[in-house]
Image (cartoon, rainbow, N blue to C red):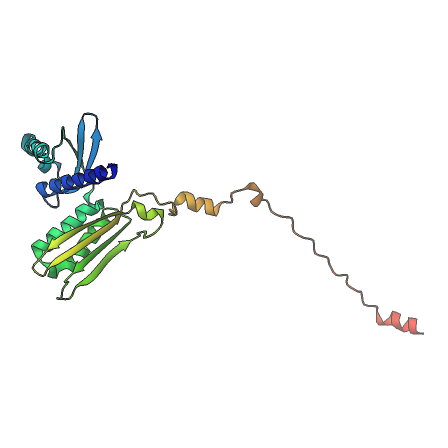
Length: 239
């Protein structure tokens, strides 16, 4: 019974998240989180457009709260808004923006859209970015295109800090899948070596005093030169 309750709880959470994203609009919501507190349910919405989500004098928040109570049977939902300071580092915002641009401009301009987005993310200071577009691009046969720049870990513990997300664009040619992976500038990479002036000075200067001491030069044995005996003395000796 406990397993069924847990599965049902997760289903309800997924329905709430999808409803909030669909209600507030594509490209405006990055993520929706739900926390349970003693006073009720806390719904955390991460967005790049907090003013649009809140609405004039909090109209949209009040309406969303009433709908969540009535439709999803939540006792006391409290909505909290988190503003994303750098949308270039948020993979979900990037994927949604690319999907909306493909729907608006068409799938034939997918290379221009992808290259501009990669350049925009790298200029913002990201360590690495990878975009994957899959679908009928540009022919009728489905293909997968990859656009990448910078440093991006694929395996190991460092791969867990890579921000990944996906979106779907519905164009005239068909459905196009968009995947974005971004390594932000403030990511802590354990095996990363930063070459700065301090490291250069450490390389140039020895770490221990013993390395500075000059070793005494080895004394080389000089070969004794044999003096040549004058010819006159040799003649006298032979006589």
